[in-house]
Length: 172
Image (cartoon, rainbow, N blue to C red; front, side, top):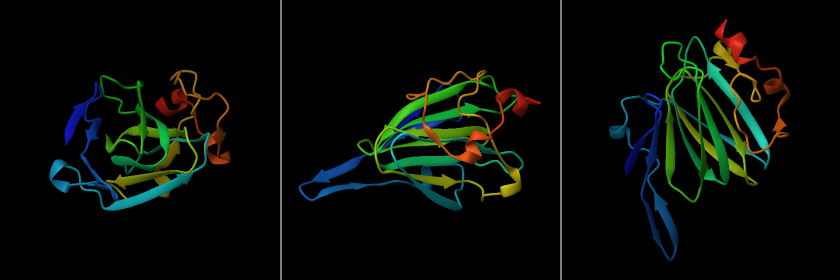
C-alpha cells in the first residue's frame, strides 16, 4: 500500500494492491492498523450516471469518512470546512474508479460530494461517527464562493441537495 498525502491536513489517498489472476482479482479494502480513526458505521450508495450528491457534512457530530469506489467512476470533491485550518474554504478534487484500488480518507470537518462519471456507481463509505440527523447540513454544489469545477454544469441533483446553503451562509 502507498500513502499519498495531499496539501490538506489529514486528507489522505491510500493506493492499495490488487491481486489478479485468470479468475479475477482480490483486494484488501480496509486494515485498521493503517488508521488512527475507528469506523463503527459503514454505508454505501448506488447512483446512475450524471448524478451529483453533496456537498454533505455533520456539524455537531462530525464524521471522518473513508470512501472507496466499488463500481464505476466518480469525480470526488472535499471542501475544508474546519475554520482554523490553513486550507479552510478550499476544495480538493480527484477522479476515482473501480479500476484502481484507492480509498480516500476525508477528515471530520470536511464537506463531501461526488459526481458520477459512469453508469451504476457503487460507493462504499466507512464513517467515524453514526449518522446524526439533527447535525446534518449541506453546501450548494455550485456555490459561487467555492467555484468547484465540476465535470457537468447540469447534473442530476436531489431536491434536498438543491436546498443546501451557500458557503457564506455556512460560515455565518
